[in-house]
Image (cartoon, rainbow, N blue to C red; front, side):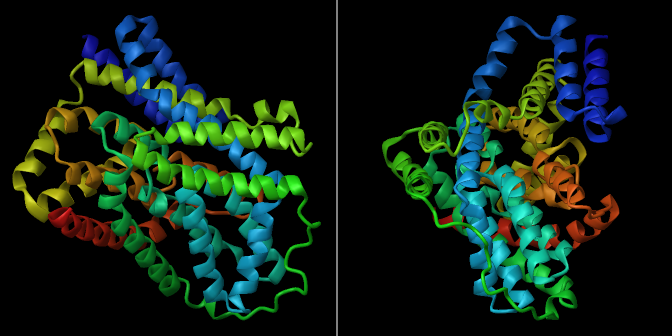
Length: 421
């Protein structure tokens, strides 16, 4: 009876998160499901402590991330980057597409996939309108590169931090296993987009005399730019000294917030306003729901699936884990899937390359549909705010054409890397 109740609450929570009844935020539904399970005694105090302990790094990372992105926006870094993309394209729409992928990949690698959809999407839309390009192909690129590039570094996706903590996967080991597969995935994704949008990319445009109409950067703007670069260097240093990456992000966010306050680029109230409570509610609520399912034994089938995939061995087993995780992300969202699969992977004593394969599926898999990741849902909101209509069917069609070859290629490269790593 207890298992049936937990299953009912979990299914109801996930359906509500995906459909947002009455327009109520995903975070409210997710946290509501978690609180209901706590209130009805399906989770003990030890279970709650376990969930919060697991999420400490992720939540601290997000707090620092939003302060970093606020400082970057106030310093005009992203608007200037849009001008550089326009200039580098030399009037070619195809080159501009490549520039969007490159810019999005760098932003995702350093600041995470959520930062890319929040900051790069409106910048690319503004750039397209400035030079008269049809915006949708390039906006799709913002969404897809955010997830495709998000397996490059542990900090490129909050999900990666969850894997790192649960499997003790170091920064260096992560980069060794997933660096090359992710770069290949970005290249394949770019190539597929150049192919499927080839008719729109034949367009030529004339760049304005001044690509970005912004005042000269102040001393504080320059210091903020240096600070963001220092965060990137900090991740590399952290890999050698064993420092957790989320500590670098949080420390960088604090320093940049102070710089912004001192330089009057940021007001104190903005440091609070920039933090999205719905996102934190979403993360915590779903973690509680998944923990209850795990305690109730409802995730046993995932353990059996992992064991079967592992028993297959070789490239077949790795593909099974990667594509299985990717499929799950589009059924229950990638955060839920990562939480659900991590326990069974631990119990199956999965190897590093199998864990990395699951991470690829959780990071890149959401490109298949609009409900695969929170980043995609945020992107959809940003696009609609810009007055553009994107249907779930259109996204699914592009996602099906793109995601399968990207994951397949990345997994094959991961298998080859794993043989020598």
